[in-house]
Structures are given as C-alpha cells and as structure tokens.
Image (cartoon, rainbow, N blue to C red; front, side, top):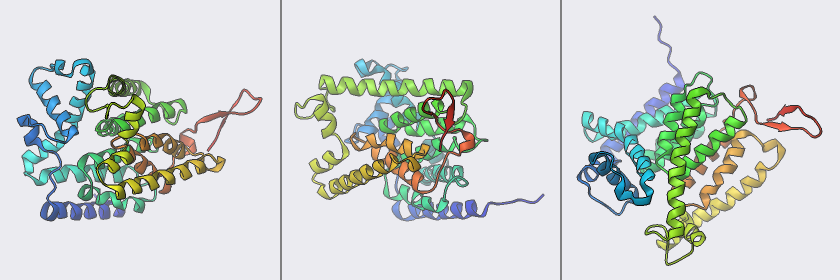
Length: 336
C-alpha cells in the first residue's frame, strides 16, 4: 500500500513542530493557569476569574446562584472551561509541553481545513501566534478560520462548526460574529445545515443571548466591571473599547496602531460597497467591523476576516451565493 503525503501539509506540520519546540525550549509559555483555577485563586485577569467561577459552580453541583441575575452566563463560562480540557489532558500526559502540543494541534487543524481554499502562504503568521499572543487571542483568531472552512468543504461535517463555535466562545465578540455569520449563510443557502445545523443554531443563540443579556444589564445597571466613572451605558461601551483602554493604560503607541487599523477598516469597508467586491467573505468582513467599537477580542475577529479576504478564500458559487431579487422580476439571481 502506497502512502501519499501532501507536501504542503507535511512542510506546515514540520514548521509547526519547530515553532512548538521553540516554545518548549525557549519561550516556555504556559497557556492556561490550571493551578489558580483548581485552587480557586482570583487574579487580575478577568477571563481567568471566569474559569475559576465556572469550576466552583461545577464543584458545587452546577450551582450558579453566585452569578445572581447573570445565572445563564455561568453556563457559557462552563463551556469556556470545557474548551480548555485538551490543554489539561495533554498537560497531564506530557507535562508542561502538553499545552504547547494542544495549541499547535489547533494551528495545524486550521491550516489543514483551508489548504485548498486559499493561498496557504498567507497563513504563515499563524505559526508564531502562540509565541507572541495570549492563548485566548490565538484560539479566537483560529476559530473563525475553522468555522468558515465548513462552508467551502463539501465533505466536512457539522463537527467542524461545533469546533469553531466552541473556540469562539472564548470571546463574546467572536461568539456574536459566528452567530450572525451562521444566520447570514443559512439565509443565503451557502450550505444546508440539516437537523444538526438547527440544533447548532439554537446552541449558538442561547450562548449569544446569555452573553449579550448580561452585558446589556451590566451597562444599564452600572454594575462593577461595566460602568466606568459613573458614565452612561453608551459612554461605558465606548470607554471599554480597545483603543480607549490602551490610552487609559498609558499605551498611546498601541492606541495609535489600533486607531490606524480602524481607519484602514473604514477604507476597506468603502471598497466592499463596490459591486465587484461584494463576495460573501467581504460581506462577513463588513459584519465583523463592529469589533473596533467593542472591548476584548473583536480585533482578532477582524484580523481573521482580513486574512481570509486577502488570501483569496472564497465560498464558491456552486455551493450557494446569497440571492438578490432583480428589479421587476419574481426570479432570484445568484450573484458573486
């Protein structure tokens, strides 16, 4: 029996192995702090505290009463904790390097899923993301790639959607984006989802509802962590955006970079409005731009969409284009 190996995939796996070895031997990043989670140690990292709270809730028999009115948000935090399970299992099996193996496994899966749908060389930066980014930022970025690859691979199962959504649950911005993208692509019949797809949409809808409802309540009630300096709801949302936060932290250079990035996105948005640019990927890029105005990892969502757009990633016409009603006709025209 002859074993056929895709040369591109082999090269990427070797490069990933080299970067993983660099992390194990030189950088020695530990991505998830399981010690603080299992010991119930709160920290200045708000996301880590969410995992601590989720673990406490599980230990108490899924008692979410400490969440108060945000009880449903507790289930989202549990999903986020479950997302870290591969890191925990591989750490137990291989020690500290196990987390690096888990991270680069996701990197390799992301590259494998889009290898025939885009110019793969655009995705070289993914190999160094785990070395220079937080583990959460890297996984949110990769989640968008894994999720959208489902719509260009006829042979991929709904498990790929679930993997993308589970990784995206690490950030509210990416979770909302994937929910919007799922509805948009389902409406355009980019690919039939079936019964499992309907369950997937309901699962996404529940998590988005829990996250958005908690944030709306937090901003309008002036809860701790949401309201800043007695500001109103809209002011608080703007003040918690990435650009404003960086200025407040005394990081004007980073703020300037984000501001320039926002201007670039505005220019990109204008280009998307032209008919020749109205592809599904560019429309989704347009949807993702709300990430500039919100806190957290919305910028990672935009970055992933920009990379996909420039790499030539497309949802092919034979897999469904969004229908547009032509003037005076009752027929639908499939457009690019």
